Image (cartoon, rainbow, N blue to C red; front, side):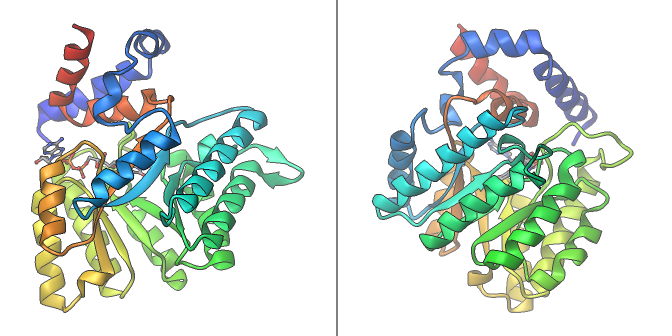
Length: 310
Ligand SMILES: Cc1cc2nc3c(=O)[nH]c(=O)nc-3n(C[C@H](O)[C@H](O)[C@H](O)COP(=O)(O)OP(=O)(O)OC[C@H]3O[C@@H](n4cnc5c(N)ncnc54)[C@H](O)[C@@H]3O)c2cc1C
């Protein structure tokens, strides 16, 4: 990340966190997020699954929304995910969905249990019933401990074939976390990290974050576990391909994951080469948080906002 990119990312995430900006964009910006969001409804999201499948690309569905503070909203979000699982199953699609525990009540105690975990348990149980898979997305660093603890309990209960989670290479702690999960033989997604984090917990320079990213992926693959290589960075993607060849790691032990609407031609190219490629497909109406992180990642994405506003 150049100095400009670092400053840009920090400014963009800070502006996005301002409630007046959020109000303005949420009210006036409907439709701007269209490039990165498959639609408001499960039916539109299922349409996107079919479209990508025609290019050999798999799906990873994400109902937009995060950080709810009341149990009723958390339960409603969980019900909406369950509804989506039912609709996917009815459409003959194996569920593969991502959930954010902050949207499901993480940190709220109900009947002596963490509501986020109770809701996640309902969702993973339903996905398992349909032969599907649920990924617990990783959010800001204050939630890593509780998310990994929930992941451990769910993985022990339902098995690593039905639930996975994420490690972020920008966090100093992630290599240690990888080792602490080893006994679960976990299915892990490795990402660089999308949140504005302080230098006390997270690396701030792209070369350091990229080097840590490679270390996490290589260590996980060498240990023989399934790895979701979630990045748009072709340097890393090509390095992972070479690493796999050099160490005799089969294509069936990893996949490439990218975001819906980002580098679509590259996604198709990788799929055509016989790699498993999965698109992370957000749907729903709560697009603001997701969209502002995409803006922060890449200055060119601002153009989509400006064009939309004009
Ligand atoms: C499937 C998936 C799931 C994710 N889940 C999480 C999560 O749970 N928690 C979390 O914190 N973060 C998550 N992220 C976001 C992630 O942490 C990064 O913020 C995001 O992926 C951007 O980093 P990057 O790895 O693509 O590399 P960057 O360093 O941002 O980009 C590297 C290079 O990729 C290329 N590139 C990137 N974007 C484009 C583009 N639009 N067009 C053309 N080239 C491009 C450019 O060459 C660029 O230099 C997820 C990302 C993906 C892909």
